[in-house]
Amino acid sequence: MSFVEWSEELSIGIPQTDEEHHHLVLILNELDDAKRVGKGSRVMAEILDRLVDYTVVHFQSEEKLMEEYGFPGIELHRTQHQQLVDKVARFQTRFHSRRERITNEVMDFLKYWLTNHILVDDMAFGNHVTRNPRSVPSRTGQSLDS
Image (cartoon, rainbow, N blue to C red):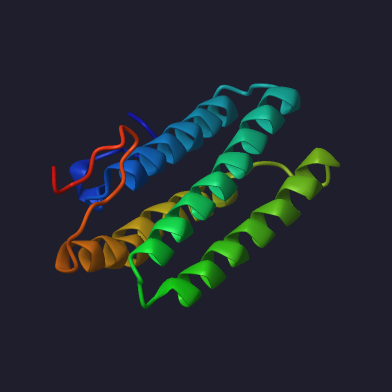
């Protein structure tokens, strides 16, 4: 069983964003697997770095879509994103300097933050897009209106 199970419940209805969320879940599961089987700190550092880097890319992508759709909650959303990036960057620095380990508490925090953020905050954005239909760019260049 995966640490975080991807399900349609986590889908906000925007293909690009859902794909990015799914990718974040996969990386988080990979990090948890590495922790559980006792992979070395180098392997764990590589996975953590990918998680942090992809999170930043995803947040930029999501915020760009929010701008395009005139999402009224964008400023609060940006603040939430920046707070997580700052917190995880501090942890990442401590991990790389071997002052901190990836513990169950760290993993539980990441899982809670990601799933709660998707189910509450990102879902509000998905609902905004549903109520204000127009073309939603997807990875394939198609829109929801197609």
